[in-house]
Amino acid sequence: MAHFDAAFNFEYARDLAGVVTDDITGALMPFATFVLLDADNKEIDKVVVGQDAAYSFELDCSSNYSIKALKDDYSVAEAFVQTPAKSASLVQPLAVEKSIEA
Image (cartoon, rainbow, N blue to C red; front, side, top):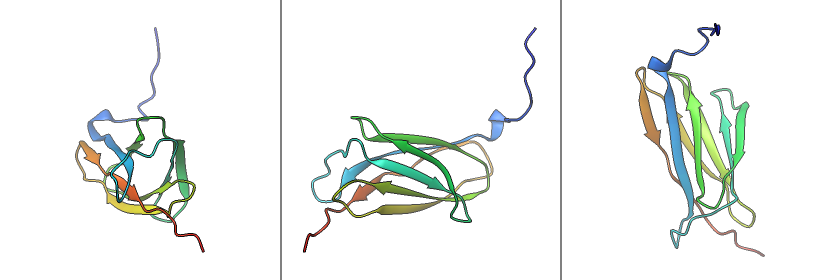
């Protein structure tokens, strides 16, 4: 018989998902890096997206986070997310801007 710890309460799971696009063309930006930071700006997780440019993270309830999208030759895009107290699926797309070279 399998034993499961009650570490996760799925009733209170928060899913955060989205895609990263070019802010001008709207084109998907595959192989961008997403960084998830907590309210103290400490890195919690990092993921490199695939061809679909999609990311997802599971978050705690009633918490504040920031996410950053990084792509070579593009500026960093950042968004702040506050999770609700009840189960929810949150969508937060990010758009990166092409860097201007001097």
